[in-house]
Image (cartoon, rainbow over all chains, first blue to last red; front, side, top):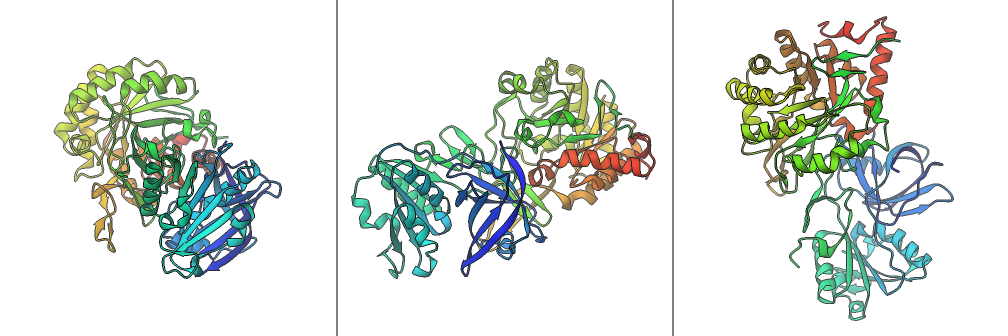
Length: 253
Length: 302
């Protein structure tokens, strides 16, 4: 069941000039599956009319904590980046579908930029099921890599940077790790990267799920603004996604 | 406690003057987690056409100052799908459920209205002669008195329950069109639909919507909507349903004072899915605080 909850900000930690980690608390925190998202009302930002959909980075159900890893992309997220501990944040959650959690097989989680956000929750749940995942993080440069130690708690982590300043030089799809055989691929990041990963998955006959982030207004399937063209017609990213199996999309890969 | 009951004529009796605007409330079910739908005056479901419509390509939405543009393009699975798959899931909900009917030709409107007429628990339709996002029609019907009259007349012949006509603000003479609809047998008029607008991404030097232009809604359109509701309420005898940028109870009360007998909440549902009940409570509080015994006492005070 979806809820509208006033969370209290516990911590707002700036991780690099344009990325921050928001930790918010509510005793009413509902159960959230890896890959789901929340929709945040941004106060004190006149230019921000609609809520901001943000993927769930991690949850701590026992403590009632929700972790959100956010990159500043415009005025809405810039306003959120300045929120202080103790302030309230009105959030609708949980929204959308979730990644499937396979019981067996080798899982590779590929994240590009802030697209790594939902993969921490996924890695944690996979490890809890006994399916230790491998995570591959791609960024432009070393200073873009954030919360490295968090991912390393739950997975073996590999890195690529476009300038070669950390890990292997290039894009995630060029990493030597991909010579290994994987059974499941999960990916979130910029669309060109997701398409490259989808192509690799398709060529190697690997099950692959991607998380999309189309612009949306309502987040609950009412407005039909966030549609993605699929083999079954227009589907809402907010309720039929954000996670899609690549076989259902009409990507030219 | 003041009486919120409003009778919109021809079988449409509302327990309070708050409806939801078509296209912002899905089929009602999307909001069940947030509100008790029974408390609404009623809700108006997504624009329904004779045949399935895939709608416009993505991107369909752009946020603008205090509002948003949309170019959904009446995506829906068609009236037969609605009757077979959606109506059975909502017909038991104890409130007024209206279907917004859209089309590209007069015969489309007529055929769709005829089918909806058979549904026992749908007390009315809202005839959408004002959608700005459909190339081959929609708004074209609502922008001239002659074509508005033609489609209302044709639908009136086959539709025997409450017939509400949704008017476009993209006209020079809103009063003339409202009067034309009234003359052909409309039971009420609702206004305004979205205002035609556009937005551009200067970095990419491209429009933000796949269709270039789209419909503007949200807080920013309220002054225009209020003015048109006031103008129309002055000249028609049938009830006027006001909508356009209502974000809170105070906004809704402004529309009632301007002459609306009921209001519709639209874009505000996206930001607060519980807004409708807050507006109902706020209207009641206002009436009680100011010593009004019935909401009818404030309608058209301006």
